[in-house]
Image (cartoon, rainbow, N blue to C red; front, side):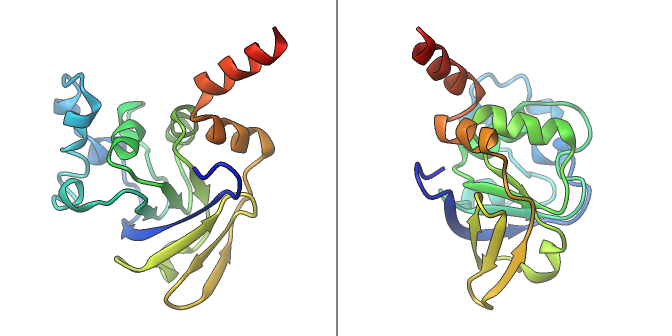
Length: 171
């Protein structure tokens, strides 16, 4: 996440509703201990071209209940490893949402985003305001702004770096 502005911009990879963690990274790859190797299998079933074509800063856009299913922290890890800049969805499973922030992957809830976003378009995301703009159409959608603590965690690079920084300041 950019250090000051909280604004990200990237190409859209569009997914539908109920994209579960097994679609993000299948269970059979969880024995791979290296996230960069594991990431090569991200979205292998619904979008086999994803891992080989996603670029740093690209944005995953999805419908309802993104990241549902089994509680696997590897799902947000492989997205971060591939350089995904943010995940914007109409809703998230609570575990995926929390795991994403814990590792420093921004996740923003924006109702009806899938009705406005198309694959390959550019999305500008303002995490502070909770707003997104589809660059090609100029359409602005408003979601849930991120609380100050969540922004601090993202700026630190995740929950562990945030906590370490906080403890250093207290010492």
